[in-house]
Length: 66
Image (cartoon, rainbow, N blue to C red):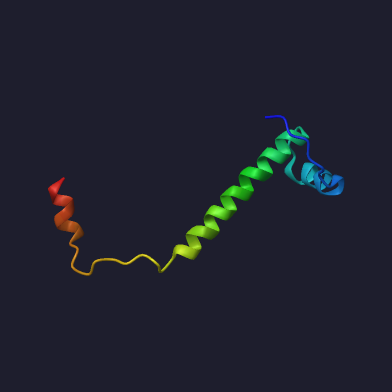
């Protein structure tokens, strides 16, 4: 999907140097992948402590059923 974006040239140049990737496109794609992965990790961290476990669940008995 072709997209025209106004990207800060200084940021893109820094990202190209730091990332060592061969092109602007590869750099932007990698940055987007890292952005998504970071947001997913933050969502996982926010979920810590929100899961309720059944105190009476016997995981060993459940394993034997398989």
